[in-house]
Length: 226
Image 1 (cartoon, rainbow, N blue to C red):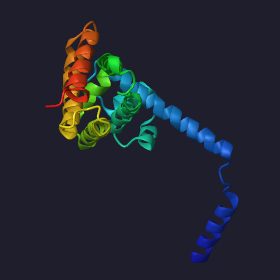
Image 2: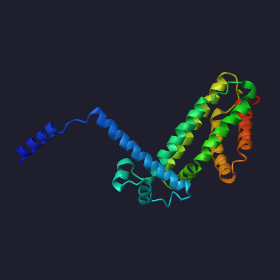
Image 3: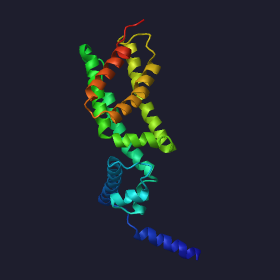
Image 4: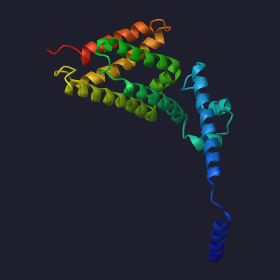
């Protein structure tokens, strides 16, 4: 029996051909397409007003038109789908944050900062259902909660580094507490922006962004030293 098992294993190795580059690309494309269906299904359900808590895996696979086995081949839980969606948004917003440079055009720094916040608000509004689901799920789902905290901490670290650079260059006041300022900017704005988007129809976005720009530009980046 042992010899037969070895012979069968050898025969299997001989007859199974390695996947070609074209086959690998085909399978990768199919996997990406399936994942996209599931992500789109989750977003559509949330945009339609369905609660993330009430969305089941069964509801999700029906919306996406895939089997349960296919779902679990790509995600462990429905929370993983939500986190994947939110992570794409984070990457987009992180790119915006990294591109913003306070040293360009000192004379209109507050206005440029306001424009930056308006872009963030516009993006957040377009994906409000996803981010609202993340905030709700973060309160009871450890995986989503960890993602949400890591998300804010990523931006907190970026702003803190930027403020420290401004201090080192002599542009921001020497008495600026960069660590606390970055926390207030990121963690404080997160809640204020969610509140604004949830209660405003969009007509007040520019005014809200203008105040954010001025509060943080003159309150941190360019406030007078004591």
